[in-house]
Length: 90
Image (cartoon, rainbow, N blue to C red; front, top):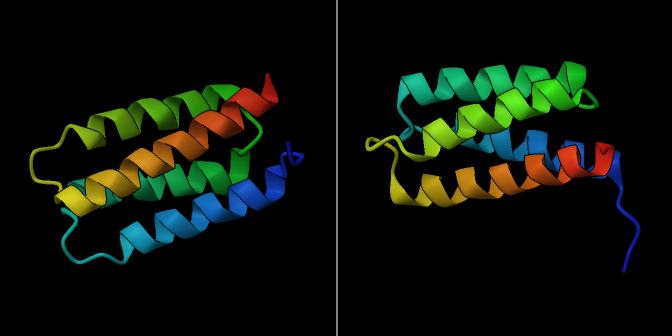
């Protein structure tokens, strides 16, 4: 199994967040939460408490009825990436 590259995973996570922020179909309230998560990843990617907060925020987003289906799958992918980051820090 390949070694986990934390910095690469953080970089891919930021790219996914930026892609979602650029999607015109995503509601403004969801973009605000995504922006906050992006800021957390940028500044405190090695803080498990902050990653947990980001995960909880994303879980709320994934249940938003206004979120397009294609964006939901990206949000779930983002959730997966954040869970990996958090798990790696344990």
